Length: 327
Image (cartoon, rainbow, N blue to C red):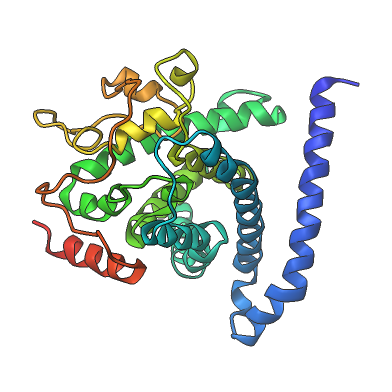
């Protein structure tokens, strides 16, 4: 049997298995809840939200079974479970188990769908990147990798913008305020910051004609890799492999106090903005490879909001005040 056909059959098997579990969970729990709250017109969005919950549950299980033990085996610094880390765990559960996506689906997603629908009525063509290469859509993993690289390129510039615009940095600074990085730090973000990123990603996916299943898989894979990058593990240096995929060491330098997000004299200061691949940092001269560890956090006096010692609600309110009052 042809290898491509075999791979497609295997992918279909796992996709069908996931769909069966998603459908069962939706019919037994989600659908009755949606009807009880009078939101039957959003049933399709609720079905999508169920998929995000299952994917997030799988991610959390992987994190607990692989990344948590890895942090204990090869830590960069002594691991202690502080209150700040506990808040990060809450952020992670909110995002990975679909609560943030649920709010996004039932609020911003319908608005985006309506806007894009009007644009199509007015003559905006529906474009698919797959059409540029005849037959690429038949090779699932090739198509997936193309989209992954394109989205990573976009995320590199989005990340640089988060460090460049003062209002956006006021939100993003919450992510950098953690002085004890762990695998849970990835989702330590202001919800408004996450909302902005979610809208940009959704618009880009629509513009490129990315299939919903590919989009879900791409986001899930990216999230899991980012959790690994934030983990308190001593893996990755200036070796060949670290130039192919961003390592925890490379990303830790981005969080380094006074190093990763503060570079006086540069138009868009900072280093190591890449999300998955370090190539963009290397191409645009923002890459920094070092083999020694740096303390993480935001340097005092950098005119950023003070998120230290605050809980989730306090951090969100502090970020909003800074965002709307920042000059």
